Image 1 (cartoon, rainbow, N blue to C red):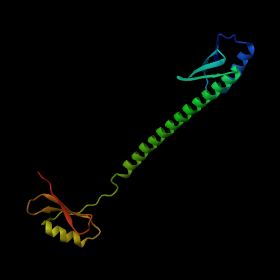
Image 2 (image 1 turned 90 degrees about the vertical axis):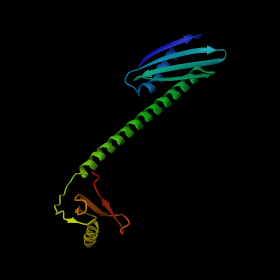
Image 3 (image 1 turned 180 degrees about the horizontal axis):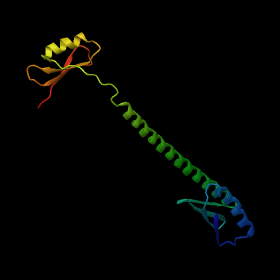
Image 4 (image 1 turned 120 degrees about the horizontal axis):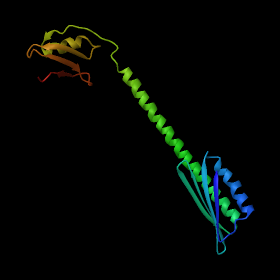
Length: 175
């Protein structure tokens, strides 16, 4: 991790420098290549620590103030670690949802494969009246429809059982 430490109204001692580097190791474990800009300053009785971390195109920022500079640095590190964990969890969740969407697409492909024609039946289409087609369909309780040539129109029609099980529907081409 590249670390840049700046002091405003404050001289950066070797002890503070080492402490910041040691604490930023907690952040460094989340990234391969990260950069941290640390600004430490004193305003009146408050010690302010401001830390910017840039890694993988993401930016994280924490600013805290305390009577003690070390406590302020600790708070910043805790805040940054929380932000990074939250972003990482959010990213993992998005990746998981994306994989679920991919799975759904794969399942759709399976459904398409299941919708293939697997059985072909051949039968004779006989000319008859729609009323005769209903009687013929009643004779075959396992069938839901019957295709026939309508004697009145000369066109292919389909008679089918409706969901109520009592009535029938007629499919007739327009042209």
